[in-house]
Length: 180
Image 1 (cartoon, rainbow, N blue to C red):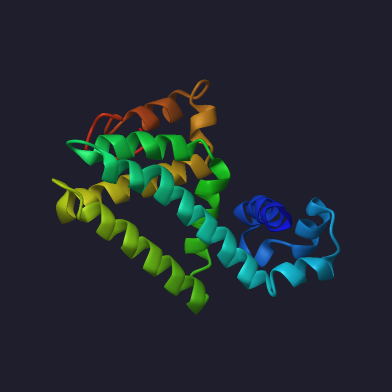
Image 2 (spheres, rainbow, N blue to C red):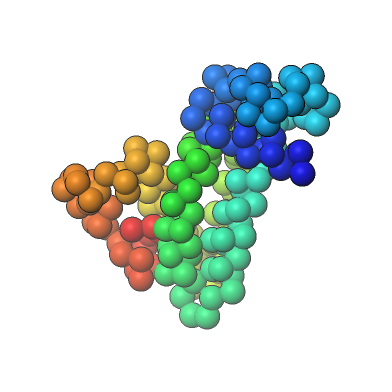
């Protein structure tokens, strides 16, 4: 249970402040454990950041990729709808972006490369998808991830441009891109 609480607090901290800006002191305070006890569960800040990323990867796999792999017919509309659900979790979108931003670190870069490759290859292998459609879907997903980071979904009701941006491109039933 303590590990899960630490990961939840670390997601909040790292998704908004990144690997280098996030504070393990703040994480320990949020979970109400001592700072040294935090490091009994996760040996380093880096290890904790990687664990948060891996948890995020698992959520994307479970919600989006697995739904596409289970879909009958064209899997991309199902995956698009699933990505839209994931976009409701702003911290998830932010931590993925923080992972890419921390890619100056060789271990993080390798982790992000491996995950991106795996997601792309799994999409590419789906019936009727192939390389070009997987590329377009992945690119649109990245764009909508950035839109979520800018909090456009929350702004859309009162911001005509945000609403127009989110409604443009492909709709959820389209096979071109996720989350719109």
